[in-house]
Every structure is written in structure tokens, then in C-alpha cells.
Image (tube, rainbow over all chains, first blue to last red; front, side, top):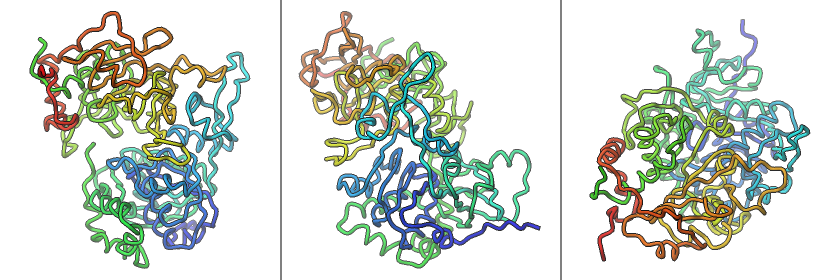
Length: 301
Length: 265
């Protein structure tokens, strides 16, 4: 009998979060963001968050809604829209604290946290304005004969990580069939607690060997799982395995969202049109229904 | 055989492809449309050893056609998710061709923002991968509109990629992995092989004069001793470009899609 049951509702997951926490969010720009959990945060009174990630609309929406104290990011982009528009407003207004990282430095800081180290050395960032605008990030000299001076990338410790995968079981075992897993594993390892949303939830994953290789991180890192089919919308959740839920990003919806960013009171308008409902089901009806989401074709690069 | 009937975009694709000549088995990463066609052209012609991706997470020995509507027919040789991109670039086995918004005489590039970093006048992309790329492996740059706004008189507003300015390097930091190879623009091709890495014009596109390039550049330029006209595309190169870009998206990359050989005024 399975005595481990980590199934939670999206609201139950967000109820575990606290004001002022540092949250890591998996995915990459417009790809595989746990957007349903982000929307649940938008519905909650949570505030003063530090948000860490390879950002897209997750960061843009949380900024627009006034949830963010600080962003730590490798970029905030929607790919075919190079700069996230609500993030651009926040950045140009100077309304949020930021730590802008080289993309590789971000994963390095997560790895340091995952290994419970204070920092990891690298040369990335030296010779650039990164060191000028981040005076708290120190350099160190190699203790060996080479004596090379290196940047000591500080650990990026997370209070919680949020990621979206294809499949999970109630024990917290997961499967990710994405073209690129990005750095979800390192967000999870860097976090005190991790919460996973998924397209499909089963009692017990009990697979063959090849499928087991699609397990991105161990279940003992997972505190809660929520089944939210289509929950990455409007970002993509492409799969490279046949028979698994796979959808592209919703370019039309993203364009509507970007147009809102350029309009007077655009965020309020976007919320009224898409986020006024009580839950994810209401959101999915407002954007054309779950069937429409799950049928969105994967983008061809 | 060199052709006379080609567009500027096609000439630039060939000049961009040339940045990888002789690189062997490094990963070629062209950011933007013209650099991406160029990486495929380089692989299909003089540099078959290059590693290139399908634009997502796989390596392919058959450069994909751009603008495709499906993944049908794509064949893959290997796997290159972003985690391996970082492993590859930190290990130095990569040469990227990138598009800075500003570049200075030291080869430092800016894509982050215009104005003050903490309160930008215009936010752009942020640092993205520029710090790591530039300190760990060779980079070249592509600038589709050569002007003093790009090639600034002083230092770039935000130094995102490292260059040859000594004041930016504290003692003990390794500089020898960093190299800015070439800068390809709509007017010319430049390198940093002058005295103390001074910028030189090494070839001028057909019909372009050195004085015009200098007037559009915010810092002094040198003429390479063998300064010549940029090599015209061959019929073979043009045929491959048409295969890599069957929908002629290259025609939209440079304003008004000018001819490669400027008509005499």
C-alpha cells in the first residue's frame, strides 16, 4: 500500500508559501512554466517575493501584480518577443530590485545551493559590468600554483521551487519528456521544498528502464504534486515521446498579453479578461478551453 | 565561380560563414537569421566538422531549412540541451556569432540596456550569455546597420562581453580564452589584429569606401595591409543558401533588400 501521498491542490501548494520567500521557477522563457501555480499566487495575498529563474510571463505577471520585491534572472524573455513587456516596465521604472545574471551563472548559483556550498568558482562575469553592478559578488584567488583569480558565484538558496512536468505519481516520482529539461533539476535541488504540477497524475509510476531515464529528480525532493493538465499555458509543454501530452506556446494569447502591457491599465484589463475567475478551470474557459490548449502545435525552430 | 547577381543579405551570409573557417570541430552558434543561415552554409562548405543544432536541443549533421512548418524529415546526430551548451562553452569548444546593440573599440559588446544599468533609458536583452561566452571562447559579431550608434566613440553603456580593454581586467584573471575574431557589418568586415588589438577593416563590400566606413564608426579604424573587396558568393554558395532558406526570408533581413553590388550612383 502506498502510504506516501503528496497530492495537493494548487491552492494548497500556494498556502504553503510565505511572504518574503525566495521562489525558484523552472522552465525557460515561454517554455514549460508552472503557470497554473503562478496564477494561484496571483490569486493569493502573497507578497515581497524574490523570484529566481530563466524568466518569462511568470516573472512579468508577478511584477505586474506587485508580488515581487526582487528578481534574480538569466533573462526575462518570451523568445519570439525578445523582452518580456511587463518586466520591461518594471525594469525601466526601477520599481524592483534585481540581480541580473549571465545565464550560466544562474545555474552555477543553483548548483552551489544544491551542494550546500557557499559559492562555486567560475571566470564568468569577470571583465564585464556584472562585477561593477554586483559589488557584493566577490572574487577569490585559486589556492593552487596557478593562482588564477576567479569569481565566487554565491549559492542561490531557494525556499521553494515550482516546476511543471508531464507526469507524476502520488509519491512524488516524476517524468519529464521535454526536448530540453532546462535547469528544473537544479531549481529543485537548490530548494528547501519543491512543488510540481503535472499533466497526468497516477498512483504509482512503475515503468520500464528507458522511461525511468526520463525521471528528472528524485521523489524525496518533492513536497507536493498537483495535477493540472494544460497548466503550463500560455507557455509550451512539448514532449518528444509519442502518446504523451504535448502542446506549443499560445502565440496568439501571448500577443494579446503583450498588447495589454502597452495599454493604459493593461494589467487590470488582462486580469479582468482572463484571471477574474476563481480557479484554473475558469482561466482555461476564458482562453478557449483545455482542449484548445492541449491541441496547440509545438513550435518549429 | 564568383557571381555578380546576389543580394547584400547573401553576401553577408557568406562573409558570416567565413568567420568559422578553419575552426574544426567546435560548436558554431549563429544568433539571428543571417548568422544562423551562415552557420549552416559554413558546415555545408568549408567547415564540415562544425557542430550545429536544429535550433532547439539536438545536434544535426544536416543543417535544417529555416522557416520550416514541421519537424518532419529532421535527422539528429546528438543531443545539446542548454546544460550541455554551458558545458561546451565553459570548456571553450564553441565559436558564437552574436549581434551586439553597441560595440566599442575594445571589442566589448552591449545587449543589456541603454543608459544607466539600474535605471535604463531603454531595457534591452540583459546580459544573457555574453559574459560567459566572451571569457570562455571565440566570438564574432554581426551588425546589420553599421553606424556610430552601434560603434560608439567611448565605451559601451554596459560591458556585457569582455574585450581588450586592460582597465577592465583585474590582475590574475585569465584572458587568453577570450578572443573577438571578426565583425561583419553591412559595409565591411573588421578584425582586431591591429597593434594592441586595434580594429582593422579587412574587406569592404562592393562599392563601399573606407572613408564611408570610418565616418559611420565612432572610433578610428586601420586599413589592413591586404584590404580587399569582400569575396562575392559563388554559385554553389547561393544554391546552398536557397536550400537553407527556401522561403527567401533573407530578403526581409536588410532594409529594402539591396543588391550585393551597389549600383553606381
